[in-house]
Image 1 (cartoon, rainbow, N blue to C red):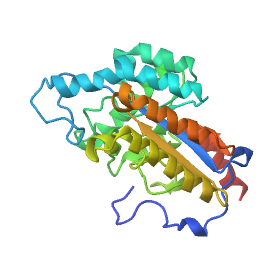
Image 2: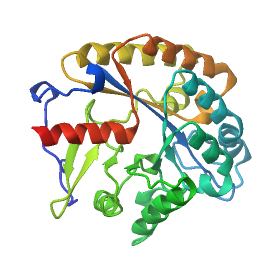
Image 3: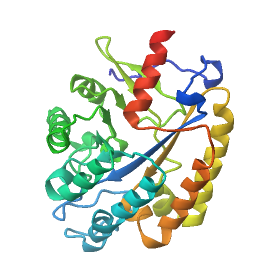
Length: 294
């Protein structure tokens, strides 16, 4: 996209749009996004990731994240499977190389995968000139080789992009991106040359990383935040469908003292009847089909 003061889409007040309908007359599309990431011990944990910024090797920050891949992710798998929720994983493709057991376990659960750069120690907006295209291509190709399915969604590492990212993603076959956390419904982004890509709602708010690492909330407070967010979206969704995105990191929510609070939040949501348990591609494609009918 060309540099501009506003994004590559028109401003659209949510109360002036056509009604959005989900399958089975659901009020809310429930979308759970575990961020399964790889941090090289030879690289610095990025600023803002909760680490102290100590020199490499930063054993303390690295070990906390490795706990998520060794232990925490399997707790998340157990809880999500209990409620019949297929996660959509924001996946660093280096996980395919270093932790293929996680990929195998996710495949058995029918999880969906979307690109999340190669490693969480490297952001797209910090890449050398000309490198972004290769990073995106390698990320998607590596995940496709490991899972047999090419991802159609993308979440940037650190939710970062450049002015070229959207066009590069579309050229690689991506149908949606979730870096733009500015809505409760999907919307269309118009690309240079006339192409399109969808934005699917992700969340800074219902996201364990800012909740635990920056706001220092308790597991019970996060549970209550999830439930309150759901209550409002469920009420509003009776008029026009909403997306309820829950973003998780195995090294945070997957620890013993937090997992039961997350379980309780899902139990609360799943007691409601008009909830569509969806993946990212299902949300994007259902929305796209509605647009084509209008």
